[in-house]
Length: 337
Image 1 (cartoon, rainbow, N blue to C red):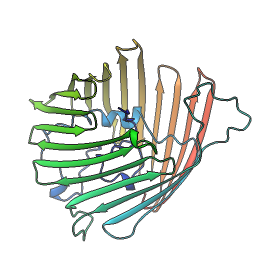
Image 2 (cartoon, rainbow, N blue to C red; image 1 turned 90 degrees about the horizontal axis):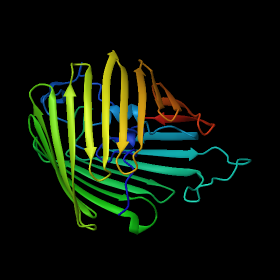
Image 3 (cartoon, helix red, strand yellow; image 1 turned 180 degrees about the vertical axis):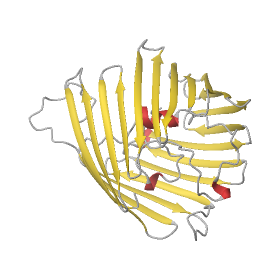
Image 4 (cartoon, rainbow, N blue to C red; image 1 turned 45 degrees about the vertical axis):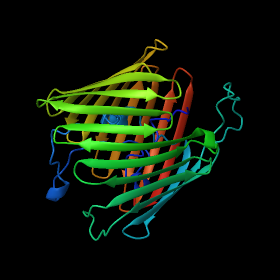
């Protein structure tokens, strides 16, 4: 069974065709929103798979451009949106060959992303009846999903992943989310697995959850557990044990100032006995955003995003002091960015 890179685009995000391909932070800014868009269920917990999204939006920032990236995005109508992306990696001329034969050198690639919102959308606040998303790139990777919300309780997601041009590496998932005022249940049927998980809010600060997963190809059942504790309105502690990877994750989120966050994440793998710590800082301004991370292996990264009316400029830098490797990149996005 092929593994999916969890750091890639989250297919549960219905707007990924218009957003940068990395996890997003929920700023919980509801000023100016109409009542139907405000959080009517403050005690509703996050999904089991999305417990650490706010932390990993900083500690595992995906959009670290190595080379040059150019994007053009726009809406052909209120319902249909397209995004084109060209990625040109840095030249490997004059560099020593990669000692890892399994890791192919990066090549230029093109990505096409599309999104269709069902229903009549006359204002930006209208809710679509269903959402269809798709993404294809020139390397052969294909992702598609359809999301349908039946009512306030039931939400269905059907997604398909082709990790490369080989059909043997395809995966198909069907998810059903059952939500209440203080709980979330999810049922997943997928290629080679099926699972059930639940998250329950206890009191005002504590969230507990678990997941039961069965790998049909291996005839194996696994248990995973999740924990969240709100120290106060600005600080949260997280813990998650992932049975499939035999991995324990501890995380901390602290809102220092308005739109300024400090994140930390500790990963320990019981399979290898190795651990890794990541520290991150994110500061968002009116027209820009800065994200800085450093891990226990002395790998430093920074990402500066400048936002204009119909454009976006990204400047990225990665420094790996142990490997003496330094990479830089920049990107330009035009249209609905």
